[in-house]
Image (cartoon, rainbow, N blue to C red; front, side):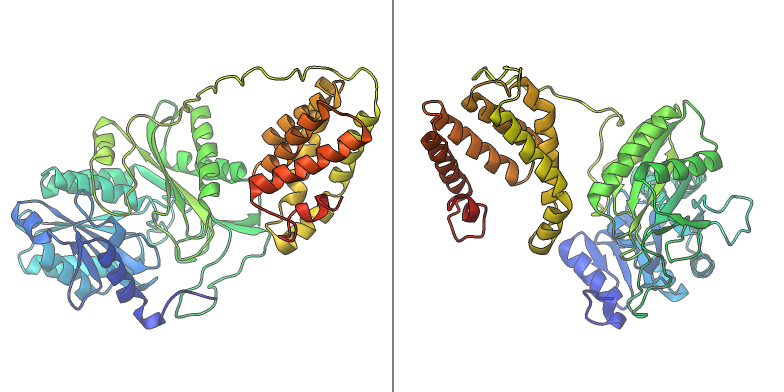
Length: 493
């Protein structure tokens, strides 16, 4: 497994150094894997509660990415997928603690609970007031399962935000703990993994998944989920995840929620947006009121492909905590106003142009030629796709098939016109149907050719029209013969 690292041993300190170099408001604790607010001591002196979280590395941007005013005061990191040591956590507590005390937000993993818990006990013996909130939002394991089973995953980030906003607003330690605890009880999370991940020191994946296989409810360290299944659609997985989350959190129609669509590490933003779309529609069907929604990388598992969904029950007070300003680098730009509805803007109509509305009344040589070209393109889709996969991105066959199908659908409306009218109609169809590079090129070829055919539809005129169209492609695309473009075929023809 290829990774952009220098040494497995240096992953954590080098990662934290990079974070601090990019964010001058974040400082590093000397001799410890701790990121903290650069103004942490001033924050404590102002009588503000310090909020600390952390865990093993490999979940970035968690936890250090949430250090900043309005979120965490400090984040403690262990090695990849390994809880930080008690001594490191205690050093962080000592550094940021003030008279208002410290709240530890701990994910429900055995190592984290033990080390954060012991650090809290030791800090109390030193006279530091410390409270702890444990987050166990993973609903893949039901609440009735053994206490070591239900894990803390991406919903923990919601708890960071609520606790940090409360602390920044000047709430007492008891108040910050209460708000954080209630948020932890009100959030549920479940995910689906499409691929495994590789710990740098291990050099190979911690488990295996077949190409057509996924695992539902997988833990963020690769712990077993509730089952393996075959790959399905984004909407199908979204419904299953929400079914479990809604049931386990006791949500019902009319409840207000915030949604977190979390990238497990290797999922494209495109897919996250598709999942968010499906989740928003599904929540509306359930009668749940979607107040806020975010998508992105919040708490990952290295390069694991997949997604988790978190739902947090909200009221006005909790919503205000989510909306409160923070400069933590990993928290997204604030969303203002209720989400879940799309504003649609209607474009102005195209200006009136040449008459394209001449329906086909009887087959003509041009009609038959257009149909033959469409049929040939559709039949050649697999071959064109394979050729483009060798030299490009593999979408040529699909694109040309889409264009041919669009022509078949629209051609009867303008195919009975003059050759120039037909070519302008084809140009309009292809411009709308084909994206990327090919749509504009085919469209400009046909438009320029049509201007020639306005005056001459003889065989000479058709030849001149093709030549004019080829020149138009060269002008628009800044290409010439020999550049390995369609001109290499068009110009000799």
